[in-house]
Image (cartoon, rainbow, N blue to C red; front, top):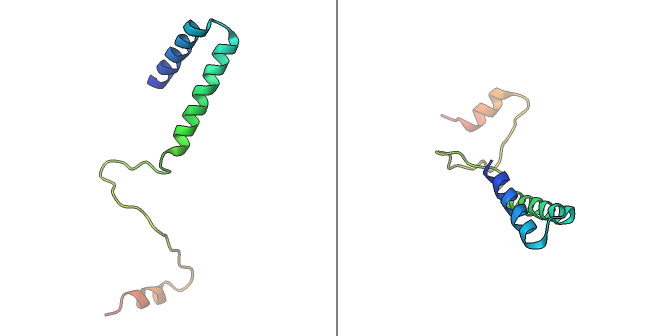
Length: 76
């Protein structure tokens, strides 16, 4: 909701400075959308929630004999 209010204020301010025309409104909306896209693409790919500090480096999937996999990694 707040980003929409900020975009509205940006359009209103641009219209007050450059005059009310569809070109000004369209150009300001396009520029703010492009800025928002650049900001979104620049953020990290995953947003960590509170109490999440770890990162998964790799994930392994083993297909086949599960007992052999357990024997190899859990020796007594």
